[in-house]
Image 1 (cartoon, rainbow, N blue to C red):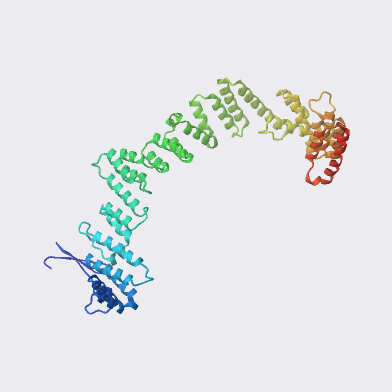
Image 2: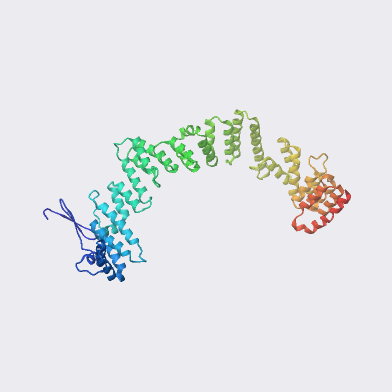
Length: 533
């Protein structure tokens, strides 16, 4: 050597690097030796000679083939392997031509090894070229693997060659073309000399039809390099709102993030943005969402379940007294203390008065009065009446036999007579106060019919008591009341007496499958209906 050199150990040899030269010292592979050794009679050597003679159109080619006809598959494989270890493209072609020639005489030879070697050699020859400068051997490529070679090309910024190799080898886009172009885009972002508008357009045109490329990752790279406007422009090309929105929030583009989330139709994403914005700028938050009906509606829906006070504050800012009052009513029932609840209901009543909704104001006032009466009842009786409606309170008082207090409530809250009577009938039946129920049924000018008493008895499974009222049922209701107490035959006779086909059909419709015998008896009476008519 004329100058100092560096020695670099490799998988299959030794690199000798000097000032103006680069050589590779390695042991000749056995398969290469078998083919090119002088006087070799290995199948591969004979096939190689046969191929050369065939190119010359010499009949010796046939003689050589006959010599190795039993080992032709071995000869083909030797030529393929030797081609892989050969650095010179000319000799590679000769060896591969020999392998191809030998394949023609094999009927069941699988071509995958030949095809793969052709592809690998084409890639190796390309990267060995001085314009690329990666002098890999086939053994080294097998050790490194193709993905590593692709990564080395990417690191050298040889994106075009890397993409062509991936396409040639049919490597999936997610591992090849898409990944490489994403690296290319990140590299382009680093070139600060280029105009941002033009650069964003260039990147989008290159990547618009490439599957699996994330514009948000490229935009994130631009943001890390301080190119905020470029990042915003790149995000416009990101089709997935779930990738756009977090980065827009990171850049402080709150309005844009919320708009993108709404346009996506993804309510979870909208909620994510809304909650982030609420925590970030609670004072300006309501002003921001006021002009966005969808965002405002979703936020209200969320807060109604999680934090009703926030909705109340929103309606207060908008001077929406009606909705503010509704929120106060909802919130009041989360309070255990009766007086605190009453005070909050009074605030709600004032809200309704401000918006001139007299009906709601009056109803709220009645509710305040009710909960205070209920509290007094609890103190006097030691029983619980909390969170009960007026109807339920009256019902419980009647069941407990506190009839005087029930009457007092009726007058105080102006409960209609019919409504009060219906409640009382069912409450007396539930409590089993049949004597009081009978007395009530004999009251003159009662606002409810006798059928109500029958229904109350049957609801509490006392058919014996219900039958006592049958004699006082008006004719037009007799059939239905008889059916209600289970007297189907008597009901059929009543229907025949009244000559009502409709009542007879009603009886049959009420008979269950378990009452087949009774149903047969009732149907047997039907001819009498025709006779009566």
